[in-house]
Image (tube, rainbow, N blue to C red; front, top):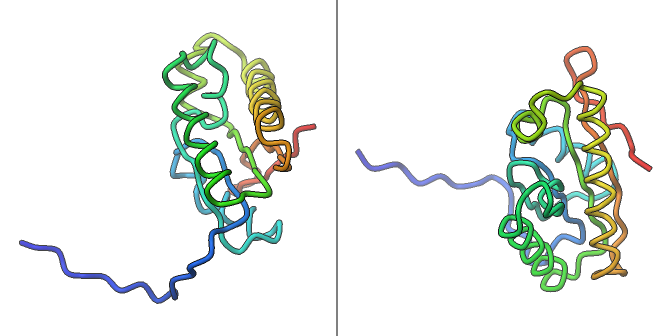
Length: 151
């Protein structure tokens, strides 16, 4: 049975967004990340979502091919869309980190996530100094997602 066409109620906007969100593809956090970007004053955003998100910039953790893939994708979006702001988000309970740090405590995992967010931001600063980066870890707080800034 063929699918029926779907017409979005939102009009198409031809200009590119000026913000890029880089985060894990865990769909439990997608709506909250979009809400965060809107709350930061970005009504539209480009997204780069893969398992692990910003952790993939860490070649020691992700491996060279995954690290190169996210680096190339970010470079393309930043250059082609004249991105001015990157928001990098890690999240509590991330399966990517559970896989790579199976025996780590939640505190140790959080430390790894913050390190990887800073590493990714440093990479972006080195190659794209015109892009301001903001870093967050998404945590659960009474059934909602809270974004804690990472300095």
